Image 1 (spheres, rainbow, N blue to C red):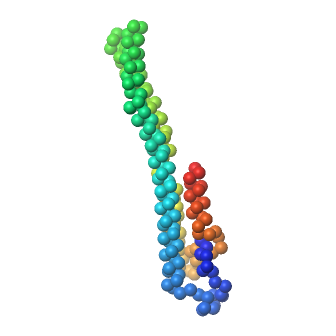
Image 2 (cartoon, rainbow, N blue to C red):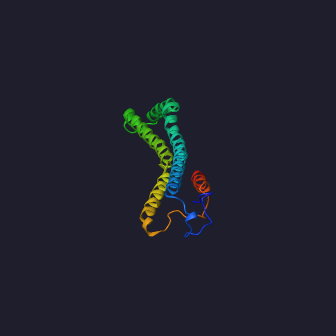
Length: 173
């Protein structure tokens, strides 16, 4: 992350170029709060996408249960009477059992369609990954404080462009 306006041209030996502990803590808190905002925005975006997928999968089940139910019921009775006329084994009971088997097959097909769309729900996978990456970065930063290596280096990319790129990539998939 690059903090704009915080880079100093002074050497490390120059006391005038060093920031106070309060300024460093303030910058760290600002970065953490900005990171939390980015994570919340990413979670909202992923949640909206997952909800759209869930609603689309549920719409198949609702269509079968409400709109197509009378049509399927009439077709099943027509099938049972047609099987009776054709001399289905078992007579009337056999014809209705074959019709019940047809109904079970149709229910299985509708269930598979619903399952396909529910499996596309990601469960906010990218948000979980970025949060765990952030936590590991903070742990790494805490363990390296005594060694003198900075946890966040300057000169990579701006703080605003990285989360936007992650969000744009996640929404494209």
